[in-house]
Length: 335
Image 1 (cartoon, helix red, strand yellow):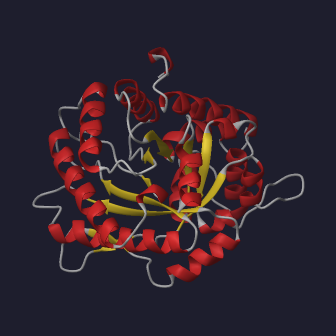
Image 2: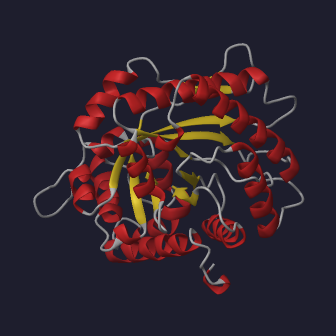
């Protein structure tokens, strides 16, 4: 598993983070609608090209997660180079989202389980041939009245572990993402309780499925107040409780932890990451980012379907700030 550990370290080490550019076509349409741009194949290709070909992005980005459509797309100028080949030429690891989405968990109202294990081995082999060297699978856990249930925790953790084992068999680093959603009114203390349980059960299942922890990247949520909670925790409290939860549950063998932004504003996601690295001291894993909207929103707002140069500039500025935050070196006035 040495090669997988090296890839995981390249994705998450030395101030590098992961760009989550793996929006499904419906999600991409929502983002384009917000800036008044039609979601055509050509416009999606142009926007992804804007991000991937931004000059110097490789200084801050160690890996890019792509959607199936994106992995099959190419740069819009020069020799129409496949995106995976272009990223590899810049020293950035290409990755692929492989789950088929969260579906209703039978017998458990308001809870979901992620599907996509059927035929996954064959799909992973194809993606490897196309240049991908890591994959992503997202599980979603909702906090609500009487939920999450033990069944929800276990079904999602089991699927994550089976996916991870198949990835490693195919030579791909699995990003393991058990996301506790921010939706609701729950307190940060409740988020801690649920995140603690989700991580415990996930690592138990990874161990049972013989997954090498050195060859994974964990993509957890931060321990944070729900979006509609009347009392929003401070940046320091988010950092403190998230670090406590990770230290309690994440084995030291794990190479990197790349947080999801999960509906936080771009500034909040950057500030929380910076605070964790500033107060974390000597940690056994690299703490970095794997942001989608929190890395892309500034770029989308600047691009608006026309201004490519402004979009790239905004993307690079946000990526640079998150890179500094991944080392705990971002000045407060920059957030």
